[in-house]
Image (cartoon, rainbow, N blue to C red; front, top):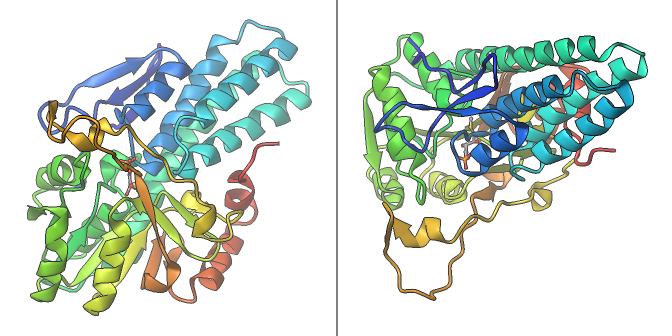
Length: 364
Ligand code: MRU
């Protein structure tokens, strides 16, 4: 049932990324040979989506460690710290990136402090990165199972950006809910916001859902309100780049207005994300850093300049939806309903210390 493509893969010589800039026109790959090349690929949106960049970061670190394997433990530790800092700085908003770096870093430090040989440290880092990928796929499938019952039979589901298999290790978060509902026998149709300026909805969400034979209709971002007003949307489900302790959610720019519209029209607004997207160290959305991207993304279309030279441009990649507008957050642990702060804290408690401690706001 889910589209079978690998977004991120560790190869013998590097990290292979499905080039999402070229979809849906062609499915081709970029082979990165250094951690810095992976960082550049993240910034260029070859690989994008919070969980997918977490997986790419983990493999970038494994590759970087492998390149340092012939060094002494002290030199390895110095090189490792530099690689971690470089990868962590790739994009600021999606906390999965820092979560993955921190998790890998903890493995390396514990082993080095325990006197484990560099070769063995490298082997364990490769295994940890593979676990991060496998766990993300499992988390997405769990999100699909937990979220399936939120989708009534015959529903039209509105989504924004791409929170699908392409944005994760596979299956997806928001699209995981869609896939879970289809697997549970629901008939549904998806409205995919085109998602200006980089068109992740029109290009990526439409591409991967059509591969699965799920009915998909692309709309311009501004059409959502009118469709809700006409009773043509039964629920909204989106992904997340970072969820603060109080349940505020950062996601692709244009998510917040959808939540406002959904509230106005009495439509449930759901967020789907694995626990690796939680940042319990960030008390609320005001503390989430928002990536500002190149103005050219807004004033150019298909390589053609569409706005007058010299005009001002505001191009934030993400916005923050306040917890009070969110009907529920579907995670790999279940469905968290308001009050979200308490529900999320309870879910985090069930997994012990790992997600909490692995996603600090700062590295020591
Ligand atoms: O800038 P992008 O394409 O990386 O933004 C992606 C999103 O906003 C997704 O909705 C989010 O990362 C969740 S992906 C499961």
